[in-house]
Length: 389
Image (cartoon, rainbow, N blue to C red):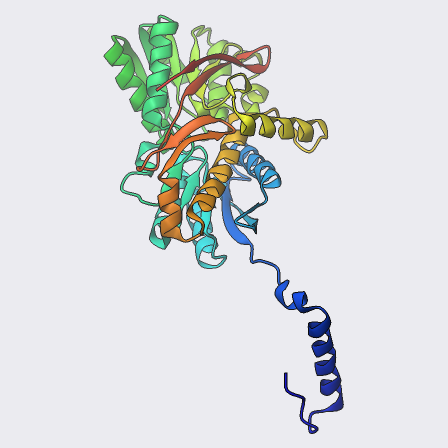
């Protein structure tokens, strides 16, 4: 380093000499700059109609982040945005995370309608979007950068129909559909198609909308049709209210739903009316295997006992964790956060042993995995059986 000219002010000459001394005595100081963090966007409904899903999923992501805070020697930084359970907010949030925050990937949204709104932003930017729990099959259609770690509704609907027809021996089914939600409409269609293929009848098909409070007309029609089982492919609030009103009307038939029912609020709102209520979902601790699943559950139990988490472990927690784990695994295998290479790694995820179980992700972005049936018994979700693809 050449000497400073005499015309340089005294204070600047002194500062230059001081810096020179530091570099001579501690050359590693010049090389110790912290590595840039890898920015990952998290799009969750932390408030609004399906806030319970977002809060549970985000808790799972945060635990997974605690367990694996870095990849490729770089720290991972999560940037959380609240979609407020709204499709427009989901799209705006995705745009902000991609354009302003420059994230390398998006985790979420968790429901199909909001994920469908956010997916085009990720696709246009060429960065992966991994939804933990949006099950609509159209979400990944004609998309290169949209992935999921959950099963899709055609499989979930088939599982529900097989359970109703084969395990419960029901032949006359009614369906009450929330037509405000893409998830609910699609799941109902797949259930009805499979139930009829098996030989059953759909004796009543009635509609509702998110936020409805009175279901007496729909339940009256279902009772008049002499249905043997009621399929409710809806979210937890409407499911719980339907269960209560069915009880009041004396409609004593089994109630069956999809993974949208799995939230503590189902039991809080439904009370004794949801006893025996069953649903298809993604995970139960009794079926969990592998080191990562066991480590995640142990960490969750630790935080639950410490009072840092209020609710019992549910599918949304482990699916959130798996979305995070799968992303880090893909980054590690790709050796980069480049969108194209990261997309290739995600599309070649094989036999991944996650918190929710072992699964593949196919080139179409969809996960291939089993489903479980849970039932409400004595105010708790209990395991019934596992249904394979």
